[in-house]
Image 1: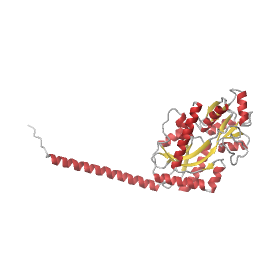
Image 2: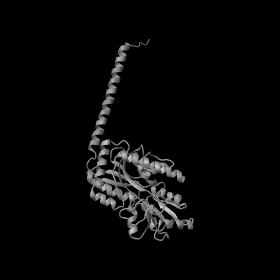
Image 3: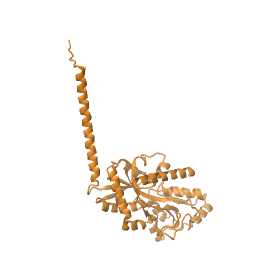
Image 4: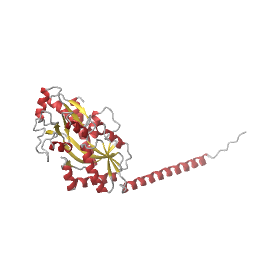
Length: 341
């Protein structure tokens, strides 16, 4: 015969309550300790000497890369820790954006972005591994500027209106390059096709550097390119500037007519550049980064260097950058629908 010892119900309930209370207290204490650790970590950011990865989604030598290195150098000086540029080109900047979206939100992996991977990719690409509006944290805008339409030296047209006339007279004879499918340079080329009633073949590259190299070599006919990449080639006579995709002439390139002057007032656009982080970054780190960017773009030396790239220095709050992203995304959705992309 087996005897089972039974405890009074009130003692059983008391023991269970004590156990649950102790377990709950342990969990709360653990969370509090973790919170204190995270807070301390955020308040100490950046740890002096610990490098910050500065991820760029385009090839070395391209517009985004050139500006990123200038900004990384200035941020290193402002914050006292190295900002190291890493190029992760591919898929119109989305390879780099995806990498950063999956990184720990500790302030040591940042994305130096241009607008395509933030606003155009969600419109053009059938599937994405990240959502720029939920998986990335906006920090601050850095600069912006219009694109310039440039052509290889041997290309017959010397203006935008001549380009349109040439393509209409020689169907299938021309092509245009871009830094990748779904980038600003691609959509502006397609917009010109639509507005001018022409059909020009698109040739996508992995980054603007490769686009310009093939343009100079004569493998493609024209492209929409950031002035900071094209300017030295234009000055050397290796590229022809046909028009600036802007309503007004640009400082430092006043000799280049605008698309508005050329009869295409809606063909206006370019690139803007911004600092992003993985979602979940502590607000104190965001604030520190914003202040550092503001310091960089406000200093006379940095402003002059950015303006020499035919760009306009510009900082912003994370809220302003988020609003810009949504506004631009809506614009590209409308354009893509119109073009049937």
